[in-house]
Length: 306
Image 1 (cartoon, one colour):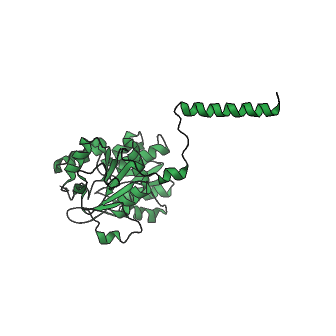
Image 2 (cartoon, one colour):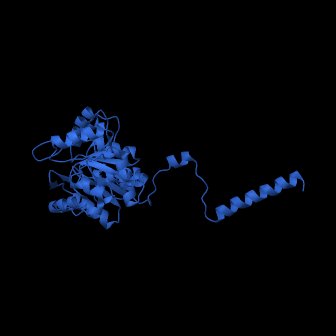
Image 3 (cartoon, helix red, strand yellow):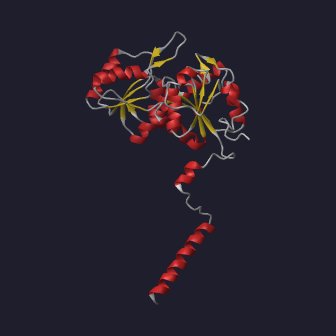
């Protein structure tokens, strides 16, 4: 067979394989530029990640409209997850506390920084050891992934939030880190809310330990977009069709934006319009509270308005 005939037959075979692939339902590759410029489609299912404090509750009281918003998500089969940097309580504890305020959120719909930290650590090592400074929300999360908690030469020191930080525990953490333990923190929040005023939180104690141990911690919770991505995986949705609702520009909105989500800032928490101007980025939308989303959960950012 001549070389020309071989080339012709090879070309026909290649064309046949390509046609067969398309006939069997394989989609041709779409150029990256087309993917990036494709607007959201009306029939794409919308899902939500929402912060807890300042969005659904504030100082132990329900924010008006929060229960209506959550009910509408359930009635419309909209996937959602409630996020919090609070690592003190387990999701079951938080579910019970929220129920007392009048909000029904199942434990499996709550994703804490402790759960996100445990998921991150499990992705690093299947089983390991850790010295924990924190409460049951953190210790339970680490036990659930099979880790051993010890103060005897642990591979990790994991710092979470607690109302009873002790000098002894902090000293132990510093010494273990200086001896080589890796330093992990559930979240970088410097302060937290309380009815009496602000309280020092994980980030403040982490700064103390960092200064004395000479090692910088790795923070897992917001604004690390890793917490968002682990929550998205938990409910099986994608960032491009998910809305992050929060009340803080420096954590909620930043993390949502960096995870590739559209973001909605509510004024029901700690942020007002003047504070928004202090940041170099903007949320996709600003509303008074989640009550403004009731009746509009399928188009929360007004992308499909006629």
